[in-house]
Length: 272
Image (cartoon, rainbow, N blue to C red; front, side, top):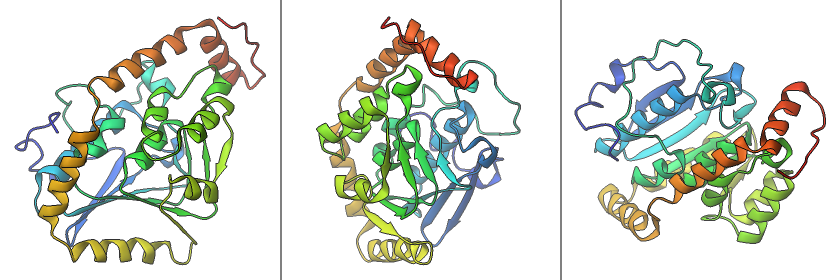
């Protein structure tokens, strides 16, 4: 974790988060995505806030487990394309700029603490970085998981790489190139979700996981997850995939797909 220093994250609870809610209680840091009106789409400063919170968890020995939640019917709709195109809404976040680019696909593996995603809303596109990077994914039995990028003339490059670490390769490729919604039960069968819960018991399932983890050595867990990160990391993988995504966006099909999506019409592909 090298985007924020240990000194920078010391005053986390005094900072103003524009896109997250942060709670720390009994060795658990809970990070809640709080951009419901935008379907919790990933705004650049929102990603900075997530990175900042994860650095805090990484450097803080009193944090043993991280829980990820989201407000609203959509857990995360992926990247905020308008924001990444330069149309940035004003916000009152006090989180400083990181010392480098935030690569969501790598962040969760490098926190070296167990991460539990409590998924009570649908997940699309880049939202799968949260799920693929989590140690446990407790999903509500009614949620949908979708990869619609190919229908927009794009391809989920980095998401594909993240999913390949937790799902069978053929299932990932089929999902990426067909762009359908995956039922939560299939996500469980393929290894993306570790638990499926109802609205009545999802909180208790998450609590049970946390309480079981507390019975074990947090130091042993931290060192074990650091070792896993070391033996599975692939240098520069996501920088390459980001460049491939940029090529896809810049292609004629990519531009046509995004335009058709905005205009709510069928795209006219030309294969270029």
